[in-house]
Length: 220
Image 1: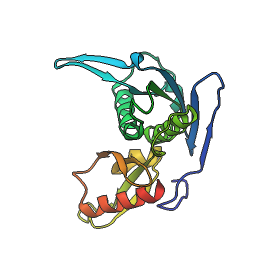
Image 2: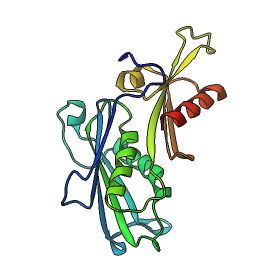
Image 3: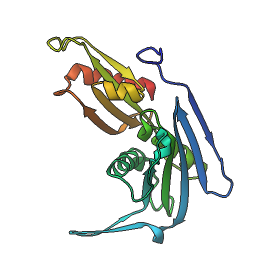
């Protein structure tokens, strides 16, 4: 909708070390979507402890995603995390977790918080990029940098002709809202760490998925 080519990414900007008092900070923007990420380090004893029916689980690496109402120009209450915030945080954590060094190599608990300052599509993938930056700024020896991108889909208006379609790279708000797919892909230069797909149609075929993966790899 902004005149880009189908495989063209919106303008990118990144920065680190925004606040000297913090252990690590990173800022990432793609178009009007902006994520400010903060990394905090603590002794391993500060890891997250979760009790469930099977026992107690400990998490040394935590990722939290905050989506305040002002990020979309709205007025609203900020309180406990929404289902959406929990889900997006879990997706970003899944993308970054394989790159976190072992406890033997880096004996610290790590918490990353992504604050979405402005959102116009794929804020969870912007959080992956900003989180990767803030981890490096904090001195965490991650194995490789991680990035994320959201792919979209437009079918032909002829509902009987599903052979005509276009796969979009780096979808923004309207392309997500009116499009048929939101395929989030995050990973490194060498492989994919996390995938999440939402579709508004009955499903996609193998060809669409192959094109989506290939174009996402180029974008990453």
